[in-house]
Image (cartoon, rainbow, N blue to C red; front, side, top):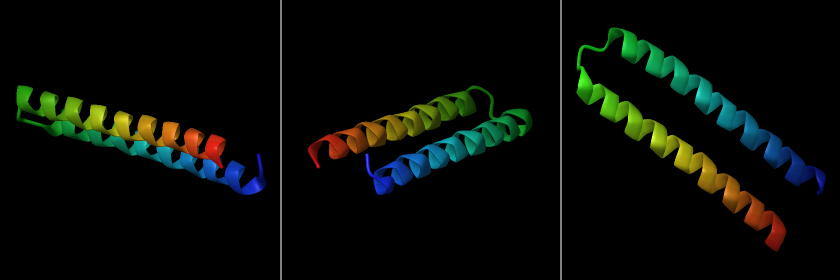
Length: 69
C-alpha cells in the first residue's frame, strides 16, 4: 500500500468518525428537545440507516478500487 492510499484510508476513517460523533450529538439534542413523538423516531432511524449505508458502500468501493488499481 502506497502512502497516498494509506492517507486516503486514514482520512476516510476520520471523516466517518466525525460523521458518527455529529450524528450522536444531533440525535441527543433532537431526542431531548423533540416534541414530535413517534414521527421523529422514524426519521432518526431513516437518517441512521442512510448514513451507515453510505459509509459501508463507500468503504467497499474504496477497497474494490484499491484491488483493481
